[in-house]
Length: 173
Image (tube, rainbow, N blue to C red; front, side, top):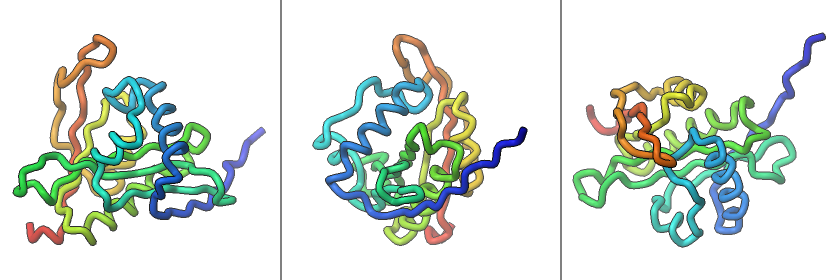
């Protein structure tokens, strides 16, 4: 017997402060996989807010639009002005919505928003085992720059990351 994949209608909107509990819950689901981040605990709203750019904070809702299906945001890579147009990408999808196009929709919109806001380079650092995330980034125009070997420890284990970047044509390059 064949099962038909459920059709999902995805809507993207700006993140509101009131979305934090849902954003944090989805982040915690990512933490639980051991494949999403080096972090081992979710930050407070104050910490998260101060570490992410105020622009391009996105929420995805699926079907009825009531629940948060995923989120995306940008973090500065440096405080030096020469890197003001370079940002690191974060995309997280609720466990129940993975594999439905939510992550790709968020990343596509994040790319659009970054271009509107003078961000010329987006980068992502992804564990090699997180092949769905790597595939989504490549489908959205990111290229693999290289492997960062033993770049950090997660729960006492050295981990590699794949460094990906996407250059915007608005940079003049």
